[in-house]
Length: 290
Image (tube, rainbow, N blue to C red; front, side):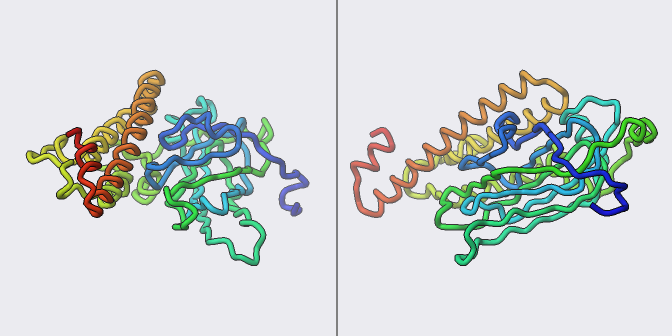
């Protein structure tokens, strides 16, 4: 410790998950999180501290195979008297981001080293944005896994907290709005195009799965369910923002069920495409229900 910290020792600060992409926040409270095939990136995680404090650094321990390419961390300070939740996290004022870049583990290294984000900022919210994984043959489904997130710092003394002025809810600058991906609730969400790119992996031209009359819900099956999924995502985020927990939970369960169907359709499309290449008309007919 340096003298400037007046002898206050760093300690691990306890936190709880407020937002975990499209997953239940409780899935990350155990300290480890793995995304599912089909998750869109960037993926946002918001955690809240038990008590406002000085967040000196955030340590991110990622899986050596399911490794994100980049992780961005911001510390935010909200209304000191407000409840610790996602809605208030959105209204908090955030410091400049600290960006951690991950690379493939070298063969000479026994394990992937943890990354340290030196934030040294006061707040009760930490906004973590995880970018797409590093492409590896051992990670065919494009998943990421965070083994552990450790927050080191120290809680502020009560007298210091009482002496702090309640921050005014200011209109964020344009760069701040852009950096918080979950800030956007309109249909033009920046995460949507990244998910749409996956449609290109499965073309239905000539395989009998594409419908002739194309509307928003009458294209190929994957496009249709992804359109529905996007609408559900927007409804879930708005429900979270409005504090409608039950509605948000229903949307989340529907999204998870759609993910299951999407995986099945992708698998069927892959098998049917291979059958077409090999001339296996029985398999093609089976897939079409003939």
